[in-house]
Amino acid sequence: MKKILKNLKTKLSVEDGKVKLDKLQSHLGDLGDFELDGYYAFNDAISYTGSILLSKESSEKLMSNKGVLGTLTGILNDKSSGRVRLPFAVGGTIDKPNVAIDYSSMTDNLKKKVTD
Image 1 (cartoon, rainbow, N blue to C red):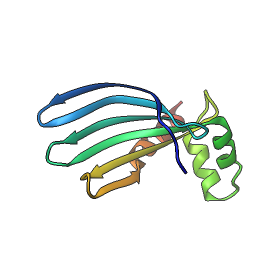
Image 2 (image 1 turned 90 degrees about the vertical axis):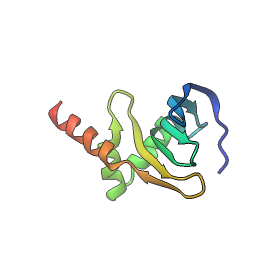
Image 3 (image 1 turned 180 degrees about the vertical axis):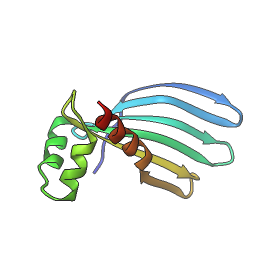
Image 4 (image 1 turned 135 degrees about the horizontal axis):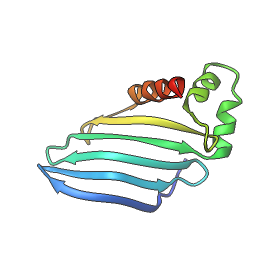
């Protein structure tokens, strides 16, 4: 699946041996929108966190799933937009990146929903 990044927006700074991105935003076609924060270090270390806000259509498709995935998307659903937000983290190095779901962000989101 090939997605073209359009309308990239970010604040970029270079300090302490790192190229830092602050809220890099773009649109991923039919998939939705994404946001990314973090840095690339000159020693090849990377550390990013971000999220993909799925399009309404992609969100509805995920939420219609009757299994565990459907239940999880209920937790990740942004009630104001009706869209699912998938948080992720990228660490490691340029040569060996580690991409994972950002469970700490999911937990914080769930706590916020329970208290609201």
